[in-house]
Amino acid sequence: MASILLSRSFKALTLAEPASLRALSTSAPALKATAAAPKAKAAAKPKKKQDRTKSIPAPPKRPNSPFTIFFKGFYHREKGSFLDAQGKTNVADVARAAGKAWAALSEAERKSYDGEVKAEWTAYNAAMKSYLETLPAADRLALEKKAGKKFPVPGGRSAAKQAIRDRPGNPGRASSPFFEYLQAQRDVIQVEHADELKGLKPMEINLRVVSLAARKWHTLTPNELQKWKDECQRKRELYKAWVETQPDKEKLLKNL
Image (cartoon, rainbow, N blue to C red):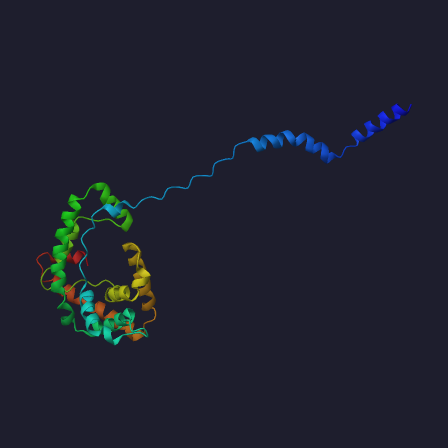
């Protein structure tokens, strides 16, 4: 009788086994299988693309603008007058002073730099034409992708337009007061913000310079704005008068 009671008690204890222990016992095979499974390999990092343009010969350097030539001379003459607390030349202050000095020049004084610029452009166009004609197509595409713009071979429409600009007595076309202001301020802005523009692509530099010029444009006084409106109108009248003296004036007038 006692053995029967002992057997029943042991059976009841077995049935009353905690659910957590039963779950552990049933999940043990699964845990074992998980532990035995090989660990998944970490995703491979994408390889950084190499800049193939580093192995391509650099294209010819673009010519200086009239202001850049003027600024170089101004900088060497006046840099000692614009020293900071550490005794270093403050390039931004020199650029602002050079911009004011450039604006104070007469039109004849500014045009005195055109001859040097024209000679530089003639040499540049010849060098660029030779460079692009001998450059492999894949290398040219790589350079254009990095620069964010096309590299047209000098000639064709651009050469025809340049030939018109180079005609004797051509005062140049005027487009808008802001564009005239932008053309006058472009080089000054690039010098003043050289650190900010460093490392940008040519197209990005151009957009940034236009944005900075627009900010300055909106701070001009009504008298300063009128100055650029008058300058634009003066150039338009000069250009129209020059066009009337040209044998192909009908064609030129259509493009006004």
